[in-house]
Image 1 (cartoon, one colour):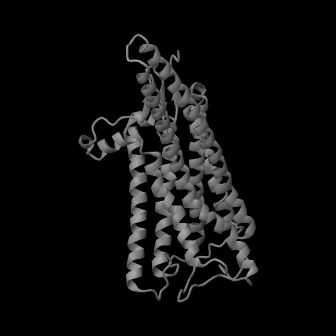
Image 2 (cartoon, one colour):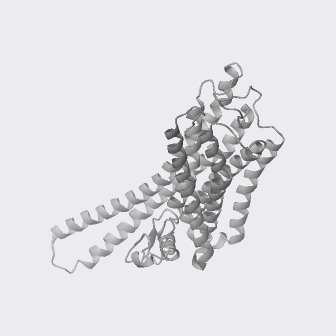
Image 3 (tube, helix red, strand yellow):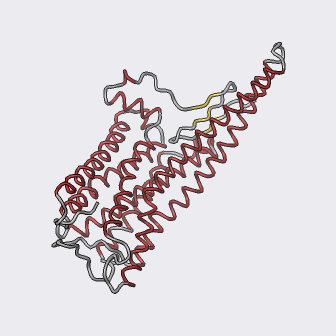
Length: 365
């Protein structure tokens, strides 16, 4: 994505169009989430949506405070905004960290909701949600603005100036700051997310099997007085097995989408983020001796692209889809959006939607 001043005009145009589309998509998607929650009371009444709106705000700030300035730099080949550089670096670290920490908080919220649903209903109050969100944002501010304003973050190496570039925003980090911020901003949150979503899958797997067993037992009892015979019982067993497999596959696909999108977007950048300070110092003090600026910048944009995917992944459940359609005036095209829940004859509801994943069992027997 990096285009130097000597680059061809058509490459500049393509780069500008692509980055503009990415920024616009991020802006529209997250603005729509914020507007929808603001407008519809039933969405505001759900505590879990507090975390979704916090995520949308952080991603919206990425699109406003971070992406546009970097996009101009990519197209022109140099940093034209002068002393705004340090402030931009702080915004970049703060907004990106806030987005990732909000994803981590959402994973914890869902784990508590599915592991102890009744306790969750009592304990997860708006006040608790505000505290969790405040911790995420406070930590994001602390590891960004304070170190950057005090110049604790900068690597003590010769600044890299691209060919033909007259000015460069030196956003390179020293070893200590790069590793510590990478741990706080990514590696610890991703470890928590892997652990929580693994447990969520195990719990839903166990609950799906239990529900299927109860449904199968109820169906068998119902058909005892029928004269369908043994063949029908075998067919019913196969049907329940297929239904169980389908439910488990749906949960697995949902969790894989959540983790896959996040890891694919951010992991390459944070690997390079920890490598670059060591490469620079071992290469005679020059920046990026073992990793090209183009490669690094491509993966920077991969990370920011996660902010355009989050509204689709985290806010595109049945409730939000219906609200989106009403807000956009196209609800007639999508009448009666159904929640992605699996209901059984015992009154149990297993919501496999990636936003909720909450099991509520009523009158199990």
